[in-house]
Length: 124
Length: 124
Image (cartoon, rainbow over the protein chains, first blue to last red):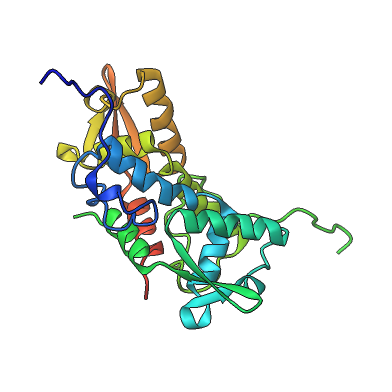
């Protein structure tokens, strides 16, 4: 009682890192989000809140076999370093995963992230 | 033919303004988005890509009766002018609608926007 907490505590389930954002939160229509829930979830929305990132995400998500290398999806009107920068942002937000095979890095959609975002937007 | 267009033309269905973003686009997993689709859609994601806006959106979306006045949802740790600013951004992105009744402005979720975002994140 004498040891008053003045800083908000993180949710216990954030200890596995920023990429495990998927099973965070109820639908946005269910109840007001807490500050912690909003922080976790806003990251994913922000990552898709840029037209170039959205095109890259869509290109990966719709690519044959469910994965794409940078060589497959660079046709979005920006330089390849910029493409790589945006792919990194999508990865940091937990929306994509990547694997290096030989010369190229292959990107896939993190299915749990897509499901989690879909769930947030379910209105029931 | 002599009058060459050098600027990209807007999609015909954007003529009713930025608030009619809802029926824009297929699921992100269906095919790579065009630049125009990405521009339209990124606006909605960007609007939800801020923790305070996400809390406000969630507070409106989950409020009894499906609408909330600023007086109901200002408990997000920022000043009321900041709340109003963020609500305006959500409205500009087509996610909220508003109506003034007496002293207060009441906000509601635009159901077609929520459905549209949900559809974008459907993986099929």
